[in-house]
Image (cartoon, rainbow, N blue to C red; front, side, top):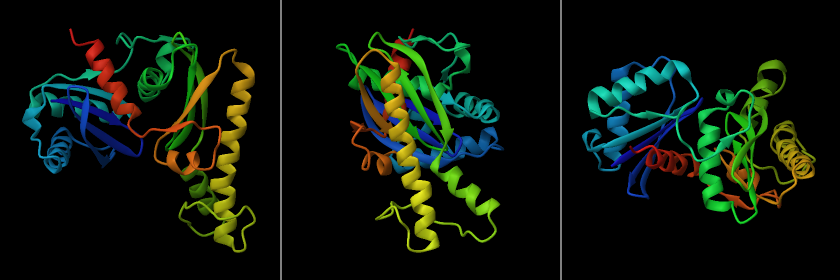
Amino acid sequence: MLLAVDVGNTNTTLGVFTGDRLDAELRLSTRRDWTRDEVAIGFERALALAGRPLEDVRVAVVACVVPPVLPAVVEALERYAGVSPLVVGPGIRTGMQIRYDPPQDVGADRVVTAVAAWHRYGGDGKGVVIVDCGTATTFDVVSPVPEYLGGVIAPGIGIGADALFARAAKLPRIDLSLPARAVGRNTADAMRSGVVLGHVAMVDGMLARIRDEVDFPFVTVATGGFGRVLAGRLPAVDHHDDTLVLEGLRRIAERNAD
């Protein structure tokens, strides 16, 4: 069993693979003060939902964008699963050139999703642009070669809503459902329009700017927690794929298997 672990700012996602088949996808809330033993307990309970004990793990691969959490995750896997995980970072073979300055500044999760997206949707003269709608909304541009060319980092939808609630005394906390119309007829709907539809407009405009700057056609893939909401309102988004980061981790683990 291969265990893929994506430690994000909000959630930690576990992917259980048998060969190239994703058998289970499990999510935990990321905590920056996790101890080694708390990580092990969380992983063990999550895997139990899939009917797989932690001891079944034979290979583990980790992408982490929360540095304080990484040592606890590595130590938990070493102590309780008996495996030394492959940690995505500088020196790891990905099969993709990183044209970023400096290359190590690209988040591990962004490289991993870029690898998966290109293998699933790119090639044959087409690049890929990934729109990852999580805590931040990021755009990652991959050439047909493939090369990671760079991208965009913007505040996510949740950050926008939280900022309005925190900084404007009379504005309420709202859910982030998709509003029926742009012109809100009450405060909550007006906020949803500004936050959600405003984000849709930002994504649409940014994709148009990227298209003007690159000299190759590309496929657009949305992923992340709010990806499905945005993909349904954006004709420019060709696919929605929630498993990119796990698939990318699996591919990188295979490439570095020796």
